[in-house]
Every structure is written in structure tokens, then in C-alpha cells.
Length: 124
Image 1 (tube, rainbow, N blue to C red):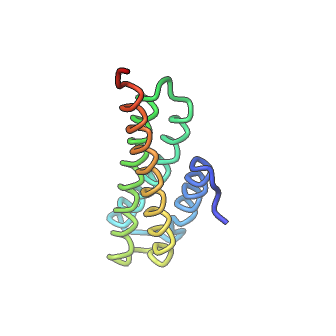
Image 2: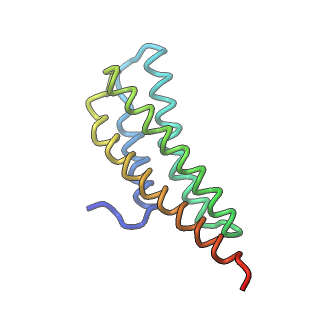
């Protein structure tokens, strides 16, 4: 069962991303793409952790938007790995699925937080 807490779920995703990295030697092209995926896939969770300590609602939204950008980027890279059948591509379907779910969840967080910020700034 997947954790309800988005930060914990993103942490588990980051762990899966790191563990998916192929143990076998790769050419420079494949390694570069995998490193891009690992970087983006782990950065999303780091942004969510930072957002938990945001100094304001606006800061919270900004940090979650950063997480969203990283998670979208991770989704792109793992789709590229799968489509080009780079080493380790067999692990891609589950990672693509989780990437898509995390993007959807964080998108909702950003939208709701933005709406709440607008609503609370209105006079009267």
C-alpha cells in the first residue's frame, strides 16, 4: 500500500529511482540520460520536504511548483529510457506510473494552495 503522506511517497519513489539505476556498464549516452532521471526523480522529493518548512503560503506554493517541475522532468526521462530501451528499461513501467501519479497529486496540491491563497487575499 502506498503511503498517504506525499513526502513519504516521494521518498519511496526516490528510493525506487536510485535502485533502478542499472548496475551494468553503460555507454556515455545512456549514463547521461539515467543521471538526468536520477537527479530529477530525487529532487522532487527534496523540494516537497523543503516545502513542509516553508515560511509562507506563497513560499509553500513556490516549493511545490519546483517539486512538480522535477517530477514532470523525471517522468520525461524515464519515458525516454523506456522508449529507447536503454539498460534498465524493464523497470520503467512502474516508475512511469508512479511518476504520473505523483505529478497528479502535486498538481492538485499546487492548485488548491494557489486557490486558497487567492481566496484569503480577497478583501471582505
